[in-house]
Length: 150
Image (cartoon, rainbow, N blue to C red):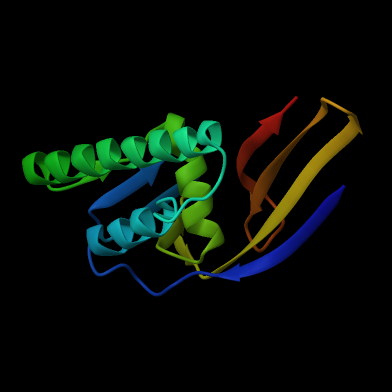
């Protein structure tokens, strides 16, 4: 199963306080937009699900609080926060929402539109995998994120 859609990226970030880079890309985002994104990820406070699912929501909220604290501290100390490879799922969510500025290091040009391709294989109950590929306008994949495996 595969589906794809195009995403227009926002204009040049007002500041580069949140950074991700590798040999293919340089991604920047301002702190306020990043914190608004984190706030949108928080579980709904009025949660009527079973206790075991509410516990997962509370754990997610704690993880977001911890990340927000880490980001705040590192920006205060160094002027920026660098996302690492363990946080590529966060980068993927930011890109899919069209947030931030993306530079193609091969061409040294800003990228204003990308393609997000949802990929996966379902081979039966508890069998399969899925993720997202992020492509430059020329079709080159610059980021692959595995979202689930069973």
